[in-house]
Amino acid sequence: MNKYKYLHLLWLIPVYFLLQFSYQVMNYQGIKSTYENGDSYIASVVDFEVKQIAAQTNGYVVIRFTDQNGETIQEQLSLPVQFAQVIMDTELIPLRYDPSSFRPIVLIPIFELQKDVLLVNIAVTLIGLLATVILSVYASKFANRKIKHGDEKVEYERIDIDDVVTTKQ
Image 1: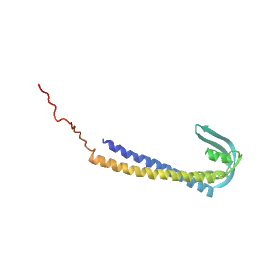
Image 2: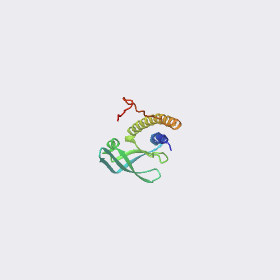
Image 3: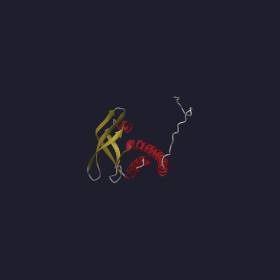
Image 4: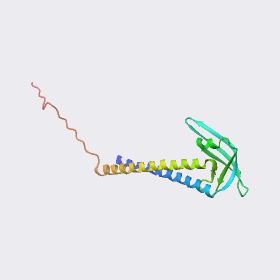
């Protein structure tokens, strides 16, 4: 097998970015749909924790509320630190709930911030997708050229200053 065929594996990187881009868009559409079409509730905070692990800070909040059918819903939502700071000292959180949405629960105090973060994530993954598609196209062209024509043959020729060394006997 030709070693240049492995360069086609670079196409896995744009595929990854495409999946990430799709996931971010689905999240964005999900929170917008839930915010616009969901029912409003007030949830009580059951548990809240912010963790500091190395250079990363994140946490979670466990909320509980009763929907219009009388069913008690308890969810643990992970939160980046910028979201957690907004609701840190809150015991009751207003939210929108739409069980048919991709993101069924949207906390109203962090909705705008969450929407902005998702837009930035979409932009960054789109830039990464475009850059890696361009890189993969050029790598594939290079690989196809090398597969078709092969490597350049390099011949080494030794050129000495002295023509022939002769020895006298």
